Image (tube, rainbow, N blue to C red; front, side, top):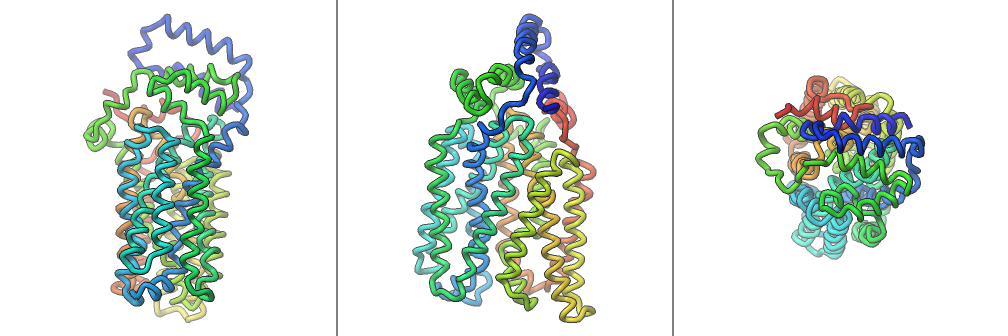
Length: 489
């Protein structure tokens, strides 16, 4: 509650300098706030916005599912489609999806600002349904790759729109918790893919079922979004004030609409999203926040986390560990870390979680390097390999996984938020693409010891970068964060 009250009291701090001279406007809004604060001492009911957030996180579930759907079935797919033993083709099955995701991510900001958040979710679901159907019915490598390309466009569009939507419809006092649902839904999607893939070795053609299953939640997302609220922030910026009020009433309750609109009118006054140019994001006063967001996502991927998710079955098989059991443990470690992060996000803060997370990942990769060395007995190497990989996933889920997607809506000014997130997510997908494409080849050429040492080095670089560049956003108003990160004109 104190967080919501502090936000209300900081409305004057968020006034643009050009509005401070308008004393009549200020007094009117001051009177408005005084009149409603007596009836607004309690926070808005979280139950009203919760169903809308839940529907939005279906896109994150699908993101996680398609991230891990080829993990267990990859060997069966390669046999059935006649490219068994071709590590480059196996890498393409993974990375083609990521190439499509780059396209979706690049367009996400413009789509979300152009047609609204709800329709953006529906546009995200459509290629996932079409692409999964194509992969499920494919008879050749080309058909599989085309289907994965379609799925990828939906995967690229979904995550940035989900972060935008959840941030904009959530009451302030549960915004961090709701934001953590995105990561938890992603974990559940990965676990779902792992469980669905368990019978693949015993049942011929089961990998096709794995793809068909994903069309169900995608269809649910497309239909359920018809009944969800549109982002009031987007409606207000489009000049549709009455509709924004109606959506706030759905999300917060009627007694909280006036305060929400007063806050929105002040925080967004003078913002013109149509004037945002790409050049503003790459140099000038917005460069620093875009650089921080892009670098965080780049380091997240260069840590090697998605190599673990994509190829964990192959890695554990080489270590002599049953892949089914190992994959289940990976899913549990990921989900457990994400739940703990949700609890600690507003207690320890974003920066602290990032520092501890990347530090733990360094230690985990050191265990992996040790396991790959010739100085450890086979049984000891197996325990170190499994333990190090599980610890790596767990510590990733504590901070490096959920924090960047939560931090971006906080550090980006409202004016550039959607397009800046599109740029940062595109960096994420470019790095993700090359990791997925080259991991198995690098594992063959360099060996696990050197490759894991490289991943460990990137984690260490991330610790230094976070320490020097990321500001703590816990308990700070959006205006305070903007002042700390954005040089004034």
